[in-house]
Amino acid sequence: MSAAIADAGLSPSDVDGMVTFSSDNNPDVDIARHVGIGELRHFSRVHYGGGAACGTVVLAAMAVATGVADVVVCYRAFNEAQRPALWCRCARHPQ
Image (tube, rainbow, N blue to C red):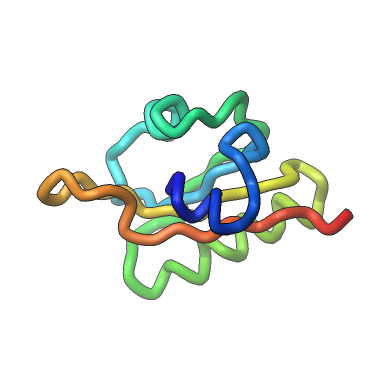
């Protein structure tokens, strides 16, 4: 997640929203704390996985479009073989 945030030209302190899958049993606050994200204004989960990836992007886009959050990270962080986040996308509210 840190690499995706940096690749987007952002820092963890810019992130104020997170979206993942309901099957991800890693607490949002733990991941945010580990990455260095401050207070979250939005966090949500989409049921299931696989094809539900588009749902995470939709929830992030809705949070940004409605002003609930400015920068939302969509992520999946299963703890399989101690690997970091499998994928991550950042969205930023246009200025």
